[in-house]
Amino acid sequence: MQLTAFEEPETLGAPIPCRSLDPEVFFAETPADVEYAKSLCGTCPVKDACLAGALERREPWGVWGGELFVQGVVVARKRPRGRPRKSEVMA
Image (cartoon, rainbow, N blue to C red; front, side, top):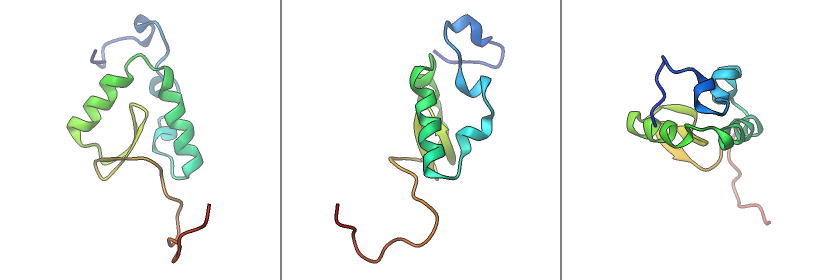
């Protein structure tokens, strides 16, 4: 299913988070905010189509279809700002 600009979110049977919330939520900077944005996509009726479109377009950044894109590639987690550790942290 592809969502076009002419479709109303109400016709899909479930709310579309990116159309009902501030879009800035899906382009967050902090790792916690990115995880929140990804969780919002969980019940979206067009999640799969959104992800497929983002992969096809190689979206440069943001949360699309419940996944985080950085430089056109899906990444598992957003790294916090700052320098990476010199040594691995023991879990």
